[in-house]
Image 1: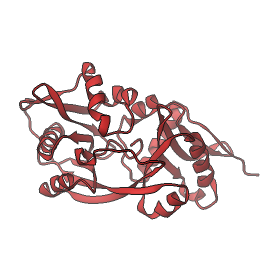
Image 2 (image 1 turned 120 degrees about the horizontal axis):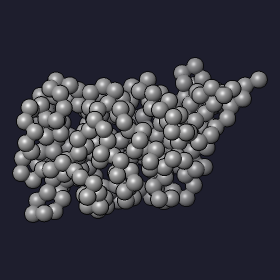
Image 3 (image 1 turned 180 degrees about the vertical axis):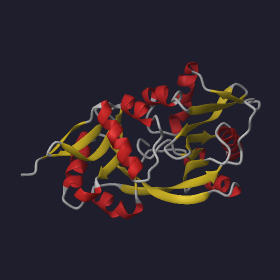
Image 4 (image 1 turned 135 degrees about the vertical axis):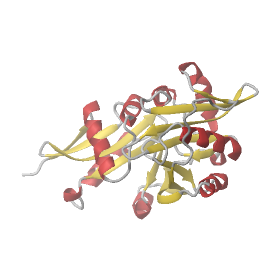
Length: 284
């Protein structure tokens, strides 16, 4: 007799979920799990069939008011049997009282609508064969590597770029192993920042936030310069950010796939024209 149960993941079980995401071709960062788990240790659910893991979903809370759903995967042999819906319902139950966001595959939009989610815009993943690597480590004027003392400043800069002040998450994200985080300043004020991190394949930039396209491009160039020449680099650009799409076009970046950004509840009032690269499809 089959017995399907759902429980909150342990930190080790989150590694299993990240492997599942890699198997789906989502190309997670090598060290993403540390920052993910720090944000909400109770936000990751695993489905067990006869005590063996077959599925997962995340329902991560930011301060009890904003939440994000990701890692929604059921192993191929067990799809179409209702296990995914049980995981979904458990995640949505955890998200009660939250405005909830997700980046869903396009073909699942109708199912998400049926659960109360409304489409806002598409995010497009672009792939770039790195031609910007440089042996020099000197940064141009105005760009510096982030330091722990800058955390409060970065959190404040994000106030119109993310729906919640994610200090816990950023305290880990800005100092991940195998990553580089840069901020841009003008006249002493932060006007952009970005992070590039090693992934299962190549590297991924996220976030890439900037006041305008010129600053975004400078950050992009110098983040790419910090990783291996000819390696693959990925950037997830909101399709409604025209300057972001222009940046991808100028460097001959190739579209890989896209997601639908959807929200259940009032959509956050974000300045998407300053979002040149999404932080992560898993946590927003």
